Length: 531
Ligand SMILES: Cc1ncc(C[n+]2csc(CCOP(=O)(O)OP(=O)(O)O)c2C)c(N)n1
Ligand code: SF4
Image: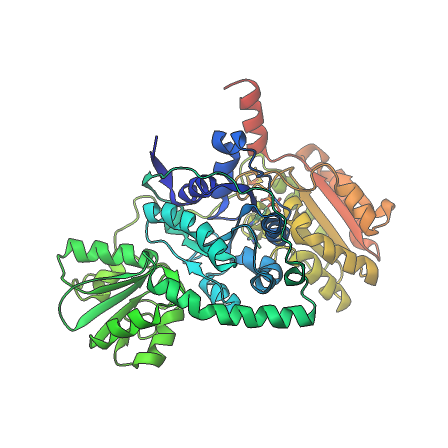
């Protein structure tokens, strides 16, 4: 069974298992979730005791992976691109400590923002941390490059960042596997000073990281994932990651004989790049995400030579596609992506029977009594409460921001200062904000819409299930102002009263609105009755 039909995300998971990981640490986020879900379902992972439960957030995930690496074992840590903002403190400092057992961080970027607040390019983080970055072009290469990533991590003593975009993560191809490798033995690191980032150690480690940079460039020069496809003419392409796949599709469709430099391992292979660029008069830079390297190459080789997202040859934002490349390479004059949609686009909607619906009905009725009707919101299925017919929610910025923004607005005098946050988002990064509000006695009402799951990303376990009352009490919210309600039509009047009472309270109150997501409930019933 060495050939499998796998999503890009699954190719990473299978390769990590075959590379001998002892654990995967992750917080769900599209398009990275399927990596961990694959490992959780894998008999191979079960058989070899690979640890795979969800973490509370990306930072806790990253630190646990680093701890496993400290113990000498290989660990995988996965998140979506905005998750790396949350894990950034641990991530940046881990390039200064270095690693022991191989540590691979997979970050799934979402160009075009299919299900994200922004389209930040995680390669920037890899450059920032001065560690190797890998960016596969297709599913087969994703498998190989993931295995390579663990070896590279142990070879360089650094974490390795593996970046994939949505299109690669969520599309399938046949992948040929290679022989699985045993897990590392438990050999906790004995290089104690290296792990203690007191200034004297950190300065020394930082010098060592700088000294490694030339080695990293040499490894990129000899990497099998970087290389030139020969061609003729004065025009050429430098293509990164999945951009190479798109480029080769256009080249083969139109039978072009165009030279291409493929780059899938960073830092840039400087010598190869210079030799390649010197030969051509015009070079199209094809990179998914920000024009990170295009900008750099404009500096090296001049604006006249370099084409790409910065001069309009390709769009400045959004996902690339073979259609866009056809236009940029001048092989068609057709406007890209002008195929009419087969199904008329529809706005996303909360499911029928969703507990958030009954909560928004209650909040809207309770709010009628107040002149100001803004409700701070957060990220999850309940963000759809920003759309008609509810239009309850006024903000959605980053996970946890509802509570802290309500606090800031309350500090500014806004009354009532109300926010809605999901259960998983609350434990991810809402609890610290609640502690700030308690410490400052800011008059806010926090509504935790607890549906027992992380619904938006497919129904993963939620870290605080069954413990929200105790968590809020532990944080210091007065017991009398931790209220429970069940969002059902029959309880509407009672729920509106509870909301109004707490909106009027001049302190911190929490309302836990608790009813299970009908989707996860449905799945449980089907499982029980074997439907
Ligand atoms: C930093 C970060 N990590 C992950 C995500 C992906 N994500 C969006 S909402 C969400 C959790 C939603 O769960 P919950 O708060 O319980 O609300 P529900 O969807 O169940 O209503 C996740 C994981 C994100 N947007 N940002
Ligand atoms: S998946 Fe669950 S939480 Fe999300 S809209 Fe549907 S019922 Fe509501």
